[in-house]
Structures are given as structure tokens and as C-alpha cells.
Length: 298
Image (cartoon, rainbow, N blue to C red; front, side, top):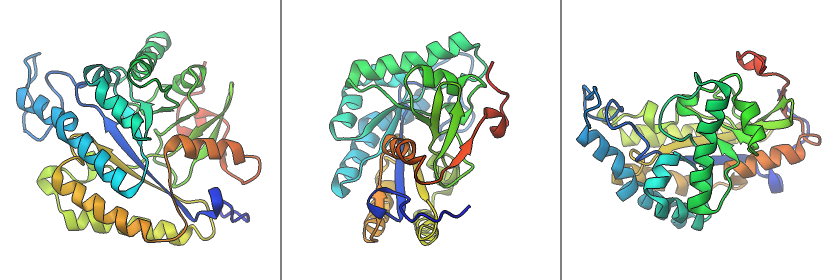
């Protein structure tokens, strides 16, 4: 729906652009994790090359991405696996030191939506403890494994002090969830601009990826003249941190920064702005998880 008030973003910005960086290296199972090598090993045997592929994110990927975003003066939101942070606390601390957001992504890189409520709460809180221990920052944002939350997740998150989650690909703008404990923000995610889904290594086409980013930006920028618009790009430590992919991101950031009225924002800032202005500038509101296809929380 279109809004009458043109003040959709701070300082009259026309479009918000937000990057996610998934810090998962070290949180994956020792066997059975998806990678670039076909026929992953199972049965509890360590899959050495796949685990080394994940480790690339720590050794090369995240440092390279941090340098790129420093170059452009853009801040991102890093969704961190607790076990990954425990294995590389210096890197989690460095992400925060450079001005980026530390958000939570679970204790380990695995599903949690089938857990009972108390166990799920512990799964989430374990990642919070790891992040606080390494960075001193309390996470306010949440991302579930493959975006699969349970009927209890949003209430649990709110109880733990979170203000938003990103496990929703239904819109190009943030929206409010009316929970029992008050307003809670969804800052939507993306599949089509998620490097782990859209551009696997075997089909990698840098020109196509760059054009996809520009086309997404241009369309949302055009729409931003009359409604609240947000562009999300999702990066993974072990994928987008490779040298050739960073070059594409470099060119896209140069392009996007050449346009006036673009707000490059961490997701906690987007969520905070949505909460602060929800009574002033109209937002989409969901009054119950039932509207997302989930049963209402007990």
C-alpha cells in the first residue's frame, strides 16, 4: 500500500540498503554440512574439505568483507552462530569494533524450530551468551537456520530482549508484529539476493550477479519516491568473502553510493526506526503469527 507521508526513512532518504553477513564458520556439523563438494560425508566422519571450506570464512572471507565495507564506510549486520563465535572470538570482536552489528543466529548451524519451548529458548540464549562474552554487545536481532522458526520463537525473542527478526521474505519493507509483550519488528530477508541460494559456485556469473544487484536497487529506488522501500543483500562468510565476489560487491557499492538519498543501515537501526515511527508513519502491522501461517503462541 502507498503512504501519503514521504518521510519513510531518516533525513528523507529514499531507499534503505542493508547487508547481512552470516558468521557460521565453526558452527557447522563435522559431517553432512552442505558445501561445494558433492556427496557430503555422513555417519559422523569428519568431512575435512567441507569443513575447510567453512573455515575460509574465518581466515579470509570475513576479514576481506570487513575491509571492503570499511572502504565504503558502510555498516552491516552480522548474524553469528554461538559455536562459531566461541571458536573465533577475536573475529566477532573485530566485527563489532569496526562498527557493525552483532546479531544472533543460534547456538549451532542447525534447525531449532522442532525443539520444545524451553529447549529452543536455551538454544537461542546460548548464542546470546557467546556473543556477549566475545564482543560485549547484546544482540537485538535474530535469524533462524533457513528462516524456520517455531510458533514460540517471536515470544521467546521478545522475552530475551530482542527487538526484531529477519525470517520473513514477504515484503520489501519492515513491519510490526503485535505480540503479547508489545510491538516486535520484522526486517524482511531475501532469497533471491542471498548468495547461498541464488549464485552457487558452479553457476557463478559475476556479471549476472552485479546486474541483479543493480536491477533490484534501481527498481526499489524508483518505488521509493512514493512508498517505504528496503533492499536487503545477504552474504555468507565462506561465499561472498572470496576474492572475485568481493570485487562485484565493490562495484555495486560504488554504484549505489553514487545515488542521492540512500540510507545504508544496520538492521537494528531499521528496527529501531520502525518502532520509533510506527505511530507517525504508517507501517504494515500483523496482529498475530497466524497471519504468517504459524499457529498462535500458546
